[in-house]
Image (cartoon, rainbow, N blue to C red; front, side):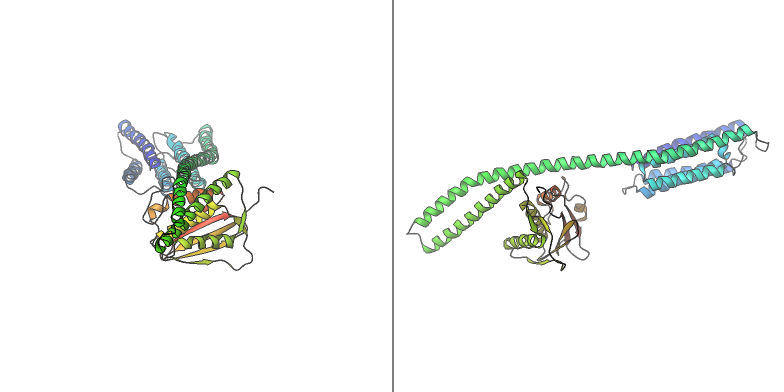
Length: 415
């Protein structure tokens, strides 16, 4: 939108300049003869400017195609104005370079070539087709000397040379600047996401350490209660169940510690894709007994190996949890592979993902929602990206959502 406003300011300045020329002609010559075409062209340019200023106050964004149309309309109306005011003899013919420079700065290469072609074509036609204008062609109807013709042709060749340089080099420079800006934005998001993940990881590590003491205390108390021969049978059974659950908690904390050590050492080990998916889904299903699931794979031979890092399995479980939290009573896990990567699709039939959240998913500014999206998905994105993969989410055509996890095939870097 700001680019369009800048274009309109430039257009307004050019319009005021041409209105000044019109007023000068009226004051000096005192006649309106041969000024109708110029007046109509200026009126058209003024109406376009007013309509475009109204457009800048509308909420929808300005697309590249719309901005291209604005520049081409500039070229068209300016060509009509030049036609009625001496053609290539008009010194304001050089304004054609302005839309070209603007296009080179903000539009893709192919659009800039369109603007360059339109400007050059209009300039070339105005060398031969125009209405004489007293202010700029005082000797119209007489024989032009060769020096005047050489001057006009020299201006045309200068425009051709300038247009070529601008279209080629300025477009490349603009594209490079946009690329650098996008990389800088991506790096800022990556740093912010890393900071958030480190904060969560530090909190998790501290929490795991703090849980060790109360779990040890509960283990001792339960063991003492079970050692009491006078303990009622029902209470003894409850204590055994409690002892079992405490053991599960200790195992979970142990896995968390081993995962941290595993990651810090940079070790990785492979697992067949089908085994990785099936094992992870079945382990997750034990904790979500109310959700039915189905694992589907292709019938095309042995599955390739992928990294079986525990954090990747947790990332896949986060996607499964999000699908279940969306209200789906059944989940489908479908896997496939190509020569370079593995693909795991998690399909649910829940409430889907709100459209406004689809653009924020995986970014540091992700918002929580009723469908289970939040910090877990943010961590999943970061984990998968750390291993060279990516996560894509979209709503299914009929109902629910589809989360697709892409992972590179396993490569042993320690050979």
